[in-house]
Each structure stands twice: as C-alpha cells, then as structure tokens.
Image 1 (tube, rainbow, N blue to C red):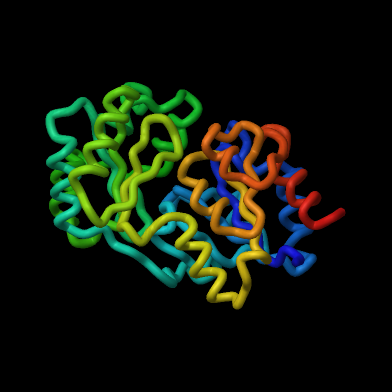
Image 2 (image 1 turned 120 degrees about the vertical axis):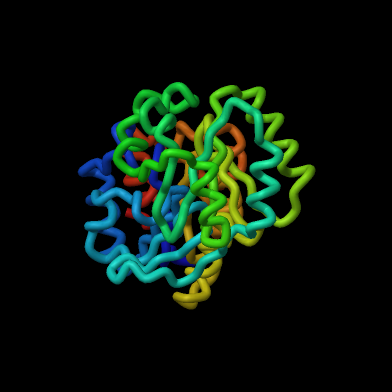
Length: 275
C-alpha cells in the first residue's frame, strides 16, 4: 500500500547535530509533499519551540508535540487536540522526586518554562554542550520552577524531570512507574524524564492524525531515533529508525536508514516512495 503520510521526529532524526534542517532533507520533504504525501511533525518539543526550518516549509500542516500531548494545525497555530496532566499526578511526581539533585521543565499551552539555575547552566544538569543554545533560546525563565508548577498545576500540558545522574534517572523512573498511575513516561535524551497524561505518546498523536485524514496504518510511515519514538514506529505501517538511534528504537523499527548527519531522512523518504 502506498505511503500517504510520513511522521517525522525532529532532533537527531530530521535535524542535524546543529539542530538545523539540511538542504538535502528539506528537498526530500518538499518532494514528498509535491507527491501528495502528508508530512507531519512528531516531536518531543513543545509547539512554540519547534524550529522555523521545519515550520516554514509550505505544506506541512500538522504537528504532534510534547510526545503526543498536543496536536496543532501549524498554519493557524490552533491546538486541535490536547491531554493535560492531572494536578494530583503532578503533586505525586514532585513528591517522588523531592530532595534529589534534579530540576524540572513545565509546559503550558505549548510554551516551555524552566528554572533560572537550569537555563544559566544546562550542562550542570546533564545537557550536552550542543543543547545549551537550544535550551537558552526556547525556555522561558522563572525564578522558582516548583512554585511555577504549583501556580499552574491545573494548566500543565506535561513536565520533565531533568537529571544528570543516570543511576538516579533509572531509580526515579522505576519509582514513578511503580507509585503513580495515569501517567505516560518516556525519554528522548539522557538527562530527561518526560511525563505526560497516560493517553499521550507519539502513537496517540499519529492515531489522531490518521483518523483526521482518513488514513490506514499501512499508509503511514514514521522516522525516529529515541525511546520516545518506539510506540510510534510500532504503530505505523512502516517504522524507520536512523542509524544513530538507540538500540531499543532500532529493534522497534521495520527499516534502518542512514545517520541523521548523513541525511538519513532524505534517503529513507526516497526509498519508501520508490524513487
């Protein structure tokens, strides 16, 4: 069955190591659009942190954001579908992670907020040097992120725990899964524990788009690199992992394409469209 929709993860998949869209990948995306294929953003990023490189491509209409927490119509910036994380769950997340060497990010209506201490020095909390500018450019600074979370506890789209110690991250993820019901937990990069409503997940966002456009699973392909892409790759007809993907993401994929810094998305698009 012909591919009629392609869902694209962004960071370390469609974007290069500098967080930019290469000329080759852009040309492949535009080619697919001209062929009548719906290109859909499927990112862990919040809507207002999506890169202009991608948003400015004519013909990309929909974005699955914050790991399926919210789906937007890009041209109008209208939120079509959204899951808020429950206030009781937020309180439990804060309880489980209190007194640890961590910080948080909070997301409200597609906008990202973080503590001044994190924005000033993301590397201290485990962010890579390459991610520093992205954090500084996309996070709205608050003096105390915990106070901000409590003040907006009924409005949160989702939240992240930022933890640089991998042993602590593993322990916290185990505790969250064991002690709190009704949440979706995933991770796109080493320092993040990304937490949403249990109905979220990129697969949930793809399902919404599939029904909106009247498609079948077999007509959808998706590209990804990380653990937060696994459910999406397994849900669609053709799941494609870039060569640099995590081992678990590669195992979940039907196909493997080239490295994200070698225009793997372009190579994969041309392959599945039978050029």
